[in-house]
Image 1: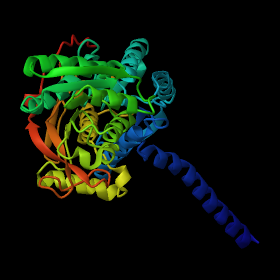
Image 2: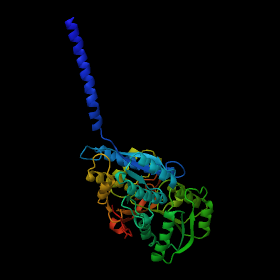
Image 3: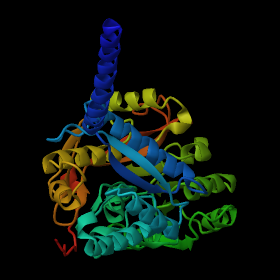
Image 4: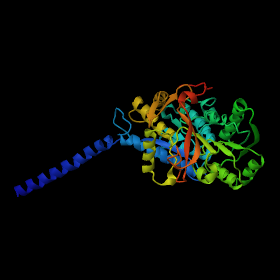
Length: 431
């Protein structure tokens, strides 16, 4: 009997030890598991510009995967992965502000947005107010595509960092090519009717007057953004004007439908564009675009270096569907800059926006041969710019096509960061 009791209590002790051990160890294991640093992507992920939002999401996911593959953000309390959380703005400014409130409720410190300067302007204002009201829960805004020049000039904010070249910088790059087109005598200006589109047309007028006063502006028009389904009336006016070229900042479906309509009415002039190198535009233009569609970007897949080629090939391996093309170097550099700033800030626990912003001002990163830095005075990223012309895939300088269209872009002008840089009008208010 004693032996049986001894055996019973022995088993009972082992069970109790195991249970207590599990209770004690479980919280320790949980505490050691690294919590991700979350980035709220506020973008139009449904509606007429959903393709642009999804392109952004792919780019940011790929960029964070690269950081996470090397162990994540290296911090004193342990490495932490980056995580993109999606918030659908439906392409509307009010929805973007609603998404921002949702991100606040979920204690997300880092906001990323770009596909609308109007939304970006509203987010900057809202984040400025939030950070003033709640200094313990301040937020950062990473802007990868909203290029209204005012956002890093009159509306500059300590909490806002722009990683794309603004519209005036892009226009100057385009003009470096347009001014040498001696056959060009007439241009039609067309754009989306909001802050960015208006800025493009305004700067187009200014730079044409300064650099090619002999070129006539034979038409100028703004149209509702993401609401025009039929661009044939606009294309007919462009053709009737006798314009030899169209200058536009249109993007997304507003560009694709415009160039498609131009082809249908028989317009045989050139297009100087901010975004004519993807999202359906090359396929819409087809053979008519060869040698005539010109685009400006921070990088093109056909940049003639081995590092650039390897970078693009790795993207295509990650996203093999041709429809998923449209890789943005600047978005990769943005995430690299953020990871660098987070590591230098050395945050343990919740991300401290002010500490990260202080380090992000000093960011300088290199990827695939592209080196860029953040200018602290206005939080405008300084990086190379390139201008390229549409060619048939396989032509000299056009190894890679766009979205399986059979057409690629050959780089015809490279601008170093120092050449692309412009003065600013920012009066930064610092906390």
